Image (cartoon, rainbow over all chains, first blue to last red):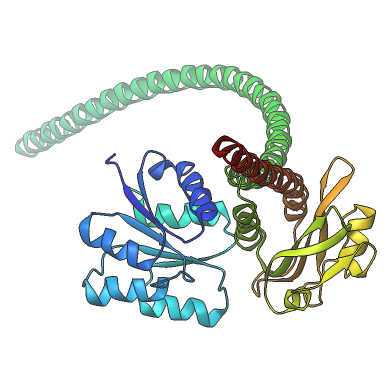
Length: 127
Length: 280
């Protein structure tokens, strides 16, 4: 099994740590290299300069929000293959539809269920 | 004479013809005898075969009877085994369901423990009171799923609650003012030191839960959740557990950071005094 590279984007250090812990409990990402970004801008530059197998991003962030980050990855960088999962406190139907329409591969609402996170991660990174 | 001779010749021919016929008849009789003997032989063989078959039939009937008896016994045994297996299958299925349920519960507990671990780790990783408050806010938003809430700390000198951090419009009303012990739900919780669910976990109404931040019996602050995120219908048992445990860690972290800040301030003052003294 090749080592996966995962990018975790959230302005909350607490939530980033929680996500890292969650990922360490999923088989495919238990030994993954996890990179953290504190906002969309930071994440965008990391996506441009590195290779990632999966991105988990929040929406509400300073400088560049999660939706704009997804849009720029899809349209600006033309990267349509990179799986991006949005994890946000915005959990209304319209929020989820908007996120998916912009180009997110999956959507989870906070507080996250580790089971759902595992399912989604396995969907995109499962062998 | 001629007549007689003719008659004799005719008789001779007749005799010869009759003789020939008798020969044929004799041959036929001989063949008939051989055939009859053959038939009798076959008859004898068949009769022997019938006796043989009847004996075999009796033997087979006995064997068949025994086999039927054996199969009936086997059938009863298999029925009992099937019943046992059916019962065992149901038991295993029930056990399986029980294990699945326990697995879900263990997963939930794991999740809760992971949340608590991260929350306590973050809370105790700083000695800056502002960062502690920020961390409590992050936990309330990301782990509990609260949209609007307030975090109060107790002013030891006046014994009043001061707003230290908040999210949303409902908590804004406390900005710039203090809450006395016993005043409102927040004050009542600070006074009693007990968690309060004023609306019975109904997130559609204000204040869905109010938790005291306690170190042993001393209340050092209060967390009040006014509104949950729209997609979160109500607080679960695990949320309450997390809140309870979080309250303990948050209280310790708040007091530690406050003490550290006070000590740091005193140290700086003393250093200032010392440097003044040295200059003189």
